[in-house]
Length: 247
Image (cartoon, rainbow, N blue to C red; front, side, top):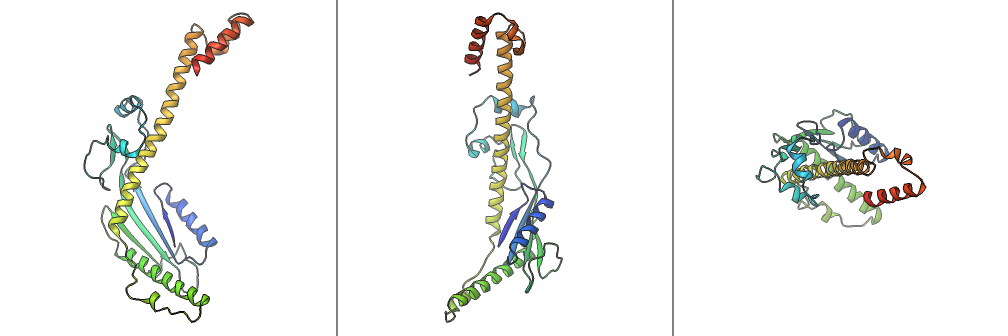
């Protein structure tokens, strides 16, 4: 079985990756792909925004829980609750869709197939319609069960396979658990975006401060003009001061 998500990759890249996966593993029995679409393309906070001002005035938030605690909406986390911190949207989910493929009797999985016996689609959000997708997942699970029985017989021809065929062995898709995993993916994605933005913005501020300090040291002259500030002994003194100040 193979599982992929298109939350952090575009659909075309995902299909290409799945096609390569099938070529490398032609005996795959089941593939499940989830497509998560955001309401709009994410962008970092503008420098003049409330989010920039508030978050840059605080130490880095070490955990996603610390970040999520700043959300304006205090509702329980859910797919329809966007991650908004200081009026900036860090993640807002528009839809969650599934596509499932199973292997045919004598051929590898075909990612391009439209055969209803070999592929199915479903939606969890904004509306739940997963019957066909769940049925296809269960079909793939039964195929894996039969593959296990065949493998067991190759190892031990006289093995009792009744326990492997017991009706009690079922494969159930827990949609609620799936939803919770996607909610967690939303919050973690929001936090990762905050972390990357904070790191970049902090470096920009430090670089700006270094340039301001250098300008003050050289009396408003750019750092690359320091060689004209005096003799060798004076130059060494200036360079020493730069080293101490910049660190």
